[in-house]
Image (cartoon, rainbow, N blue to C red; front, side, top):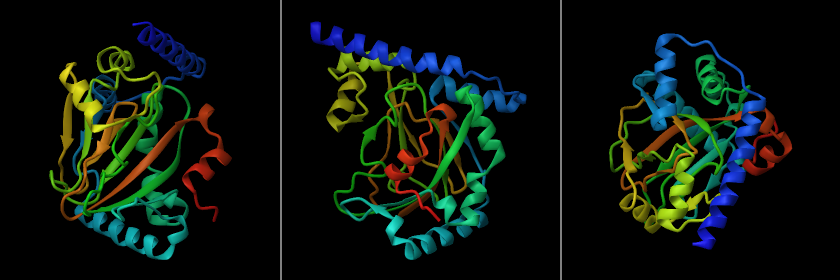
Amino acid sequence: MISKLQESINQYRHIQKALTKINKHRVQVTLSADEKEVIDEVKQIGFAIISDYYSKERCNQMIKEIDYLFDTYPKYTWKDDFDADCRIYGADRLSSLIKEYHADAHLNKMANAFNQTPTTNFHTLIGRITAAPHNLGSGQGWHRDTAKPYQFKSILYLTDVNEENGPFEYLTGTNNYSSLYKCIWSANMKSNQSRFTHEEVNRLLELSKYQKRTFTARAGTLILVNTFGIHRGSPIKEGIRYALTNYYFNDYQINIPFLEKKFNIPSI
């Protein structure tokens, strides 16, 4: 009990520090009725789905570009231990085509509206994940991108994704920072914990009202998501999944040298 109480106190201090910074830099963004409906959905349940954001033809064009970038820039390519999950962070610096998604003014507006602070898309990730034995999926298992509120991303499926193709998965309800306390008291987790075992997630689902949402969708589907919530790319069982992901940061958080080193961002 004492240990859980101390973990909760630590968590409370961490959250209050984050919220104080948000309030200090808070701005208002004017949205249309449709845009407000989308952002309200992300705030309430953690995500919003927009179908046909890109056409099939444009998705195929992006896929060809991604394959070219992986072939051309191995020094910027990250791979998991199973040779399944392949990534280049900051691919927008290598390709004018990827830059189009990176610079999408509508997505930038939505990120600023969600964060309610001046926000910048620091980089775009290209992802190609291929079925391989024992792979952990995109993102290497269940996690929060940050253990403090909040993190906004836009994920664009470039291929059709079914339950076998490593779909994005999300625990609804964990987008609220109250879930940090739920993790401590109901599932014996630690304050500021950002990585979770399969067993920990199952225990959390059993002891709470959270539910797992699996995102199967057509190529061109856009997912706007608060990745403070617990999520993963499900282990891929067949085929190849291609996706683009924009990483939006509060301007006051951006430490360019740190982020460039952390993500091996191209310097050209």
